[in-house]
Length: 383
Image (cartoon, rainbow, N blue to C red):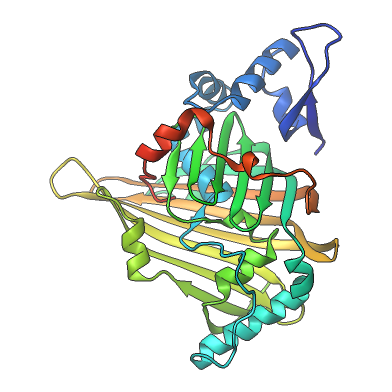
């Protein structure tokens, strides 16, 4: 797909074109209106979406009726694009830990992580990185069905989009994802971690790693899996892989719960190639219990995410995955409610670079008009 990085200036003939903060596929831009003026207006409204955007939501529903259930489509986008993991990035900490401390399973995991660090470019090269930038494109296939029907037979729709990621040590990062009139943004200024969509307010969350970095930031991957256990082996795409498992502890589960939601469990797996040492697959599954206003009934949301990483290439001496496939699903069930949603994403990295000149902490501040909202809101769904 050809990525559009400039948008024509229809307000002033001969005026300079606008540089898009998030490059998007030409296919998506062509669907944004019947003419150049309409496409520019819709794009401008979407880029300015710091508050719920009825115009963007209406446009998305018209262009694709299957996405009219925007709340759950937004949850799928958050699950794929900015799913949070309840662990701090700790990018300013040492990457290696003593292998002899702990059980055999724990020591094996630490050794596998050290092999991963070497395959990713080595500790010296990774420690020399202070910032990162990446831009890419996505193709998403969305399906929805009730709890009885097989979701594989459900009606599907395909949408194209784009994303951009910025990161600066130790704990500053920002991500934007745009697909089919929906905009997801998430970030951290090192103190506040937040997420936001074009049809909801800004919410604060208490954890700092976002899954989208797994193929782009070997430091956060190594830190995440440094306290795991090795539970066995599995063949993934023809590669013999070690399986590292991270089970969220009860105190963290309690900290991420709210008055109306309970995070029942959250488990993460990483599959590391025995041949190359690189991360081949990443999995994340969690169960959330939400209280209802009717008696003691509850609604459960079971979410799962499986992401394959591929096409590793050296960029300034660091091995970065340049493509991958992700499958995300949400299963909602309760006394009477049963429904499944599934989103399949294919992503490609168009540009990636390290040690970005001129990048400062000011770039990672939350949306200025929503600081009060961030202080008051809480991420209710835990996704």
